[in-house]
Length: 145
Image 1 (cartoon, rainbow, N blue to C red):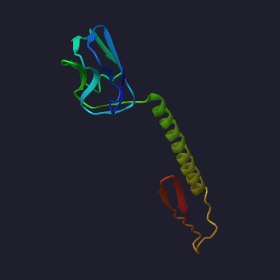
Image 2: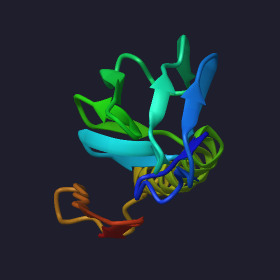
Image 3: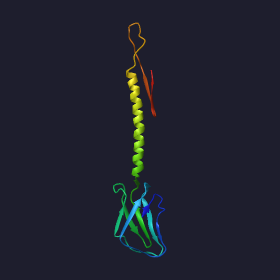
């Protein structure tokens, strides 16, 4: 059975439902608030319970349990949790790593240029002083000498 953050997916049964066996709940990626989610609604009533409940939740992130009343099966989440989309998370990390590598390369190039700076003008005592101010902005380094 599917579960999403708005809990729009639920099994509606016009008659009576007899429960047994296993229930697997697959949560789509997103943030889930603590609370009660209706999974099954049987208008004619329920008999029995599921003997086994499995899911794709991160057990460390949430405490959960099934609950039953006369015609509904509920999923109770005692704590909120975030179901992570591993594929898109990995892709986002790779994009950010590439952007950071570009920033670091720009900074290294600016530092190398500053270290190789040679004075062209000397004072009467044959001294040359070079002072650079470094300003680091969001995605680029600027050297003002």
